[in-house]
Image (cartoon, rainbow, N blue to C red):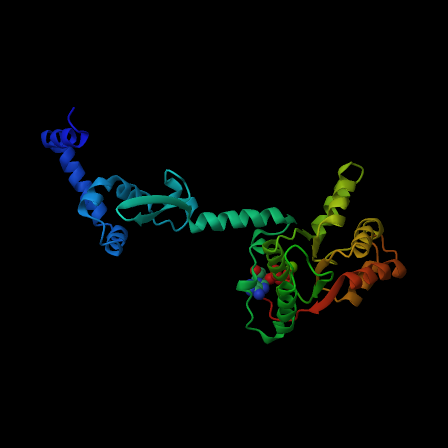
Length: 311
Ligand code: ADP
Ligand code: MG
C-alpha cells in the first residue's frame, strides 16, 4: 500500500485548488505575529516538524483570539468558549493546552462574589465598589479610610472582626460606597454578607407580615455572618419594626458576636431621638435607647464628612 503522505502529495499535485488553499493557509499561519514569536523562541524546531504539525499551529492561530471582553465575541466564539490556547514545544513536538482567558477568570470571580454578597434593594454600582477604586484625595476622608483598611487587613480568611462600623455623615459622601467596598473585601475572604437598604427592608418586612416568610427572613438577618444596613433613619419606623424586628435581630447578633455595619445621615445621638418617635407619633425614649446601646456594641462609629460626590 502507498504510504498516506505519498498519496496525499500525489492528490495535492492533482488538486491545485487544495494546494492553493493550503498554501494560503500556511502563509496566514506563519505570518501570525504570535506564531512568529513562538517559532523564533524555538529555533531547533525543524521545517519538517512545522509542516507535519501545521494543523496544530492553525488551531492555535484560529483560537488565539484577542478577547477584550468575553461576552462580546473574541474567545467566547472559540470551540471551547472562554478558553485560549497555549503552546508548549517539547523537542520536535508541538502541544496545545487550553486555559481560561483572563476575562473568564474575572467573570468566575465575580460570580463567586455575587454568591457571597446577598443584597436587598441595593443599586448595582454599590456592589461594584472596591477598595482599589476608593478615592482618597480628600483628607477629610482619611480617618475613615484608615479604619476601613485596618478592618480589611484584620480579615482572617473566613472570619470577620466582631465589630462593624456605623458610618454617619451627610448625603453623598460615600457611606454606601464604603459598605459596598467592604462587602467585596469580605467576599474575597470568603465571608458571606448581606447588604440591605433600610427603607425597602422595612417595607418588605411589613409586606411579609402575616405570611410564613417573615420568620424565615428574620432568621436570615440574624444569622448571616456579616449584616450591613444602609441608610438607617431614612424614614420613621413603627414601634413594631423597631422593637420586634430590628431589636430582635440586633440582640441576637450581639449575643452571637456577629458584626453589623450601618450607614446613616444621623449621628447615633440624633438617631436615638429619631427612633424614639414612632410612626404613630409616640415618644419612647427608653426603647430607642435600648436599640442604640446594641448598635454601639455591634459597631464603631465612623464620621464621614466630605464633599457631596453626587454634585
Ligand atoms: P452616601 O451613601 O454617603 O449618600 P454614596 O456612597 O452613594 O454616598 O456615594 C455618592 C456617589 O459617589 C456614588 O455615585 C458613589 O459611587 C461615589 N463614591 C463615593 N465614594 C467613593 C469613593 N471613595 N471612590 C469613588 N467613588 C465614590
Ligand atoms: Mg447611601
